[in-house]
Length: 318
Image (cartoon, rainbow, N blue to C red; front, side, top):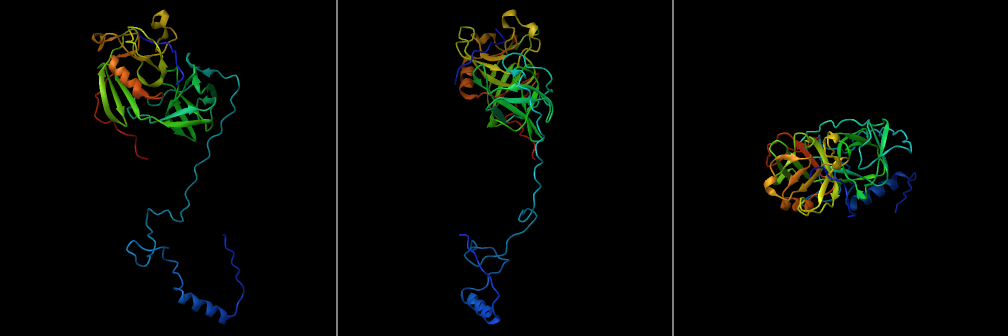
């Protein structure tokens, strides 16, 4: 088997009055202040010093922001109102008109995901044209999409049911969640590498798509789980990915409209080959571990060749 169909489950204030007083009265007040401890020096900071002595002057240096006026962030680009009849992205093919992923083969982990709280429109650019609705769930499963880019107050996410494609989302009814994991599939070397916080956790042999039905390259994500019991799937659940076959007509008729999956296989001896309908097959024990550890929205990256370092590079410093 290769592509999989989705069959998800529900987881005092003090006021001072200052009047005009005689010079003698003012002198008396100053004398009283001196008796009580002196007139405070405005150049000194309040409170004792760490050594218990008199407080010293405040430290002012290049890194101090005291008194500085920081530039305000520009307001987000406005979002044109979306029409109510926009298509909703679901498990079927995503609507056209969305832009390509700007860096589909990047090994820099996508560490944050977007979760719609209510239906939110996806646009083809910040302030651009609304193309489709993103719903909080697909087939009843809560959706988390990795965030690829931020610009002008908007965020771009990897879209489900489309390969190497993003949609732009304005500020609105959504929240974010951390994504600590990254799964890298070496299509040429036929091996899967699992990273958490950019450190290699484990690695296993896998099978990938055959020549006629290759596993799509680039980054996608775990959309949800499917329950496909049976001997060939080693009686474990299947991860349904956001990716679909690059050539939907190349897969067997019974798998048309299905998504690429990550799943166990009933015979380990069949692994390490290019013999699936596009899915990534893995050992039963490895699949059980990943099912226990990986959350929806976790990025899965398919590369033709990948030499697995013990640690992946982090995002560039800002």
